[in-house]
Every structure is written in C-alpha cells, then in structure tokens.
Image (spheres, rainbow, N blue to C red):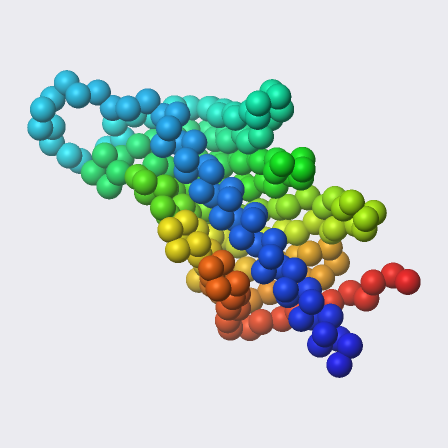
Length: 206
C-alpha cells in the first residue's frame, strides 16, 4: 500500500512539472523563430511555390531578457530554414534554455526541430532531451531534477498536449518511468503511458 501511494504521489508531481517544461519551452522556441527570422522578399507577385528554403540562418543564437537585463531564454542551432510551400521552420541541432521567474533552469536539445507557421505545433526529433534542473524551495526541501528522453516529442500548443509514439523515459531524481508511448493532456491533467510501462521508485533516505 505504501509503495502504491508513493507511486501515485510521484506520478502526480510528474503531471504538474511536465507541462511547465515541455509546453512552455516548445511554444517559446516557435514564438522566437516566427518573430526574429527575416521575412521573405516580395520581388515576384506570384512566384512558383516549391519545397525549397526561401531563407535561412546558420549558427544562430536568439536571446530574450527581462526588464532588469537578466537572461530569460536562449535558442541556438546550427541552421534554421523556412519552407514557403508548407510554411514550416526547420532547425538543425536545437539547444534551448529558459529561466522561470524564480530563476529555475530548463533546457531542451534535439537533433532537429520542426514548427508549423503559426507555432501551434512544434516537434523535437532525434535524441530529444528536456531537463528541468533541481532546486531548493522556500521551505528548504530539495526538488530533484526532472528529465524526459525520447527520439520524438510533439507539442500541440492550442490543445496543450504533448505526445510521442516512440519509447519515452521520464526520470525524477532517482525515480524512473518508461513506456512505449506517451500522451499528456495538460487541460485535463492526464498522462497516458502505453505499451510496456515500468516504474522504479527509490525509497527516500531517512
């Protein structure tokens, strides 16, 4: 009974932190790209649309700061390309870090990133890793780091969902959960882990 209760409490914590990490980061990355990438020229009134990039940047770094000049977010990549026929943005070697209002760090990396034109859907592909750093809260209690790994993570910002059809590993401190797929619904606070679901809970030190 004690183990089941601890599993339930740990799972509840995961469903609280997961949307903060994924939805915020992925939506923010898309937001930056759409507003900082130069707009394509308008030399031709009716140009033929093909699946070729109309603009790109290489080895870019985009940063935002708060009113006091503190770094809030930074997005880096080897290359970003815009494709007008599908109105999508592709990024190679994604590295994204963000600090919340209390200074807690979250990072996200992947081999590739893909966003649609309005930023409502963002995908991290290839060795996708999202990490929320640990910290000590106001009561002095240590909050362990949280890490999510998969080869594919898909965030749908309009409906606040994060899902993957590929194996996923969620690690919180010394506790670990694995599954063949994940579908997280932030609006209803429901995490659906399917396939071979396994959880390992490490007893807290006295």
